[in-house]
Image 1 (cartoon, helix red, strand yellow):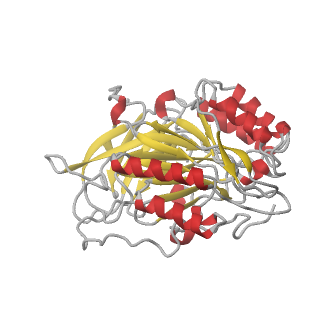
Image 2 (cartoon, one colour):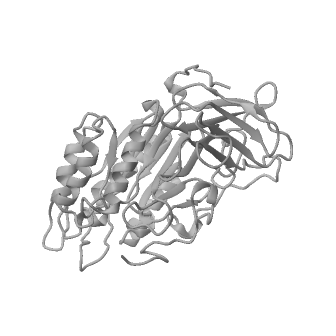
Image 3 (spheres, one colour):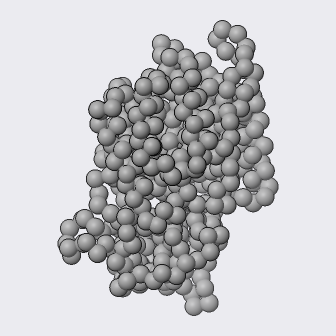
Length: 429
């Protein structure tokens, strides 16, 4: 069953990015340097290249923020000069009180062929020694219809080795973020925020609540983070907070990268382990009940039926070649073949009967021997029960912008739920 080659206009494609977690690079011969190279090799081999928008690095790129450590990333990126990269700083990128080496990397990547072409923003900020001009590494761009806001939690703070964490945004960046989120909401434009840690990790209580409140009030769709070192999903009824497993300091399982998408009203996320053979599947529509907007409706869940009562199923397949076929089914029912409608989407229409619980999409590579886990992959979701009692509009959480609303274990998405990281239940590295 060969997949159809129909191509849909790019305007209907989902927004897709790949999140490579905290690298904590130290030496060229270390495991994390080899893993980084292997991850970028796999990503660069994805066919077609238009399957995703960019690769996101959430900070803590270098363990000690030194030029020698950033050179490891430069060497890995040099093998794939066309790969679009987006990055922000983490606390380790100013481990010794300076971001000079990160600054050089930031400006170099920003000005590269696939870069965002925006310089650091210089603001007057209080610092331990005296108020002075400080470069901050925040920027915004619209990608595949989504307003992407990249936030710098590090440069305004006083954190460094011997002092500890001190995440801050500063007044100028907070005002910028407020303006951006408000403008996106006013235009009905989906918005994604990229930051190193949860807003709840900000040092100043007022700033902590301001940023979390902005995200809540602006109905930001996704906040994508590093820092935890483990995969985690937290949903407050409006916003999905997602953190991805560290490449360099990892107790959470197989190294790899997260794949996230915003497809119309639906936000989706799943972790891809490097030790799994292709293909990789992510259902981008409809929504799963655990991360669907509340109150759920056919419109907000991507479950508006067509004239024949069928819902549209969409999935992203990442691989080094087209799958032999991709198909979907409801619960344990009959399979329906999906057609490739664009570089990013396989699609089918399928009946969703009353009482149905799960939706499954499977992609099969021509190299699959007919048994075993290699060269075949499945994503499974549980769409919202729209026939259930109507849901009320959610209230803002007691601790907005935190892991208090985390979902817990969700193995299908790569989430263990035990928070094995240095800031929670893991080792301190």
